[in-house]
Length: 81
Image (cartoon, rainbow, N blue to C red; front, side, top):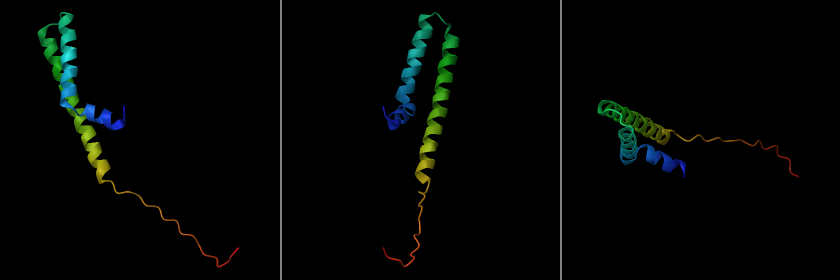
């Protein structure tokens, strides 16, 4: 899996909804009360929003960065070999 694939997944709403569905199902299977399940689901979605924002801003910043060009000047001594 490439870096671009990971970034695409971390910013995908479908991915985070799948994570919430998995966690919700597990919590329900272990008889956790509904209030706690709601809180955990909300925390996951809030964290997903922050992750998506950070990744998106990083991509924008990387796109706006100007490339660095290094120029090396070679001195001509006039000598020939």
